[in-house]
Length: 347
Image (tube, rainbow, N blue to C red; front, top):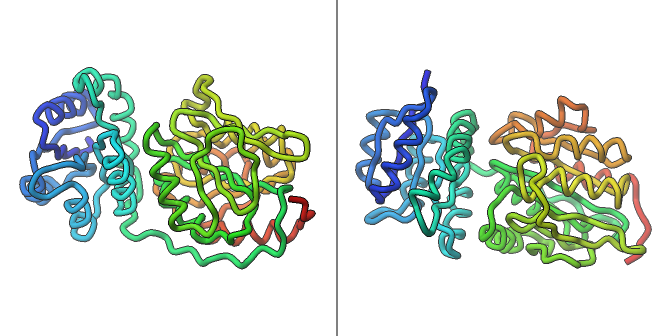
């Protein structure tokens, strides 16, 4: 049975372009194209779509308000159509908090050409959204106990994709302020990661920043890979430092979780505690396996708590996870492992 898709956008051009892309695929069906939230509300009732693409910036009732009402009345997988501006990025991150599955950046210039270039991305995200689990309430994770030591010896590494912004937020909210330096790769385009880092910083006891390259990794600090740049962790004498790279995509992505994990195999090995969270595809699976083989402690989020059980599934199938846990149990498992192995107090 074809995936029923409803397009909600005040731009007739975007509605037509998305409609053409959707109707070009045998497994997708465009059931409606609404210019505003009022028409969309009626179409949701009439057609009961499997996936909705939703413009954030609409007249009368904006996309965020429509999304909030939709998630209360009829939870449905939603892909946000976002503009690449600071306000657009902030609204996009907010939409993910409200339950949207993912987002597609709207091209600034040459909309028709831009949408065509995004054709494969749009189709992949629609199909992924149709298979996803809609989360109307964010997972509440109990704050972990204070770590009994601080050290630059240990590193926490987290990788995620679809559904990952909220999963990472839940983990970071629970981490103690003296947790080891934490490196994070979330699949996200340029312009959005700085906003995401600020949101994480506002809710975390640790200091969270978008990586710039050259930083010395310090406990109590978390570093998010910037959009469209790989993040590598290297050994520099007794320290760990960050490098950013513009090299080719790895496992189909830049930034890539595999790229980050593989760098940790070389630089930190058994000093790493790594977690692979919700996301589509396989990025991070091979890297997590290499980390486990190097003596690192490895975790995967379980299927039931994932929005999309793609990346963790691939890692579990490889035997890359020491433990497979629900999201709410991952922070405590990390801290328990760090307490178990202890470390020196060198800073």
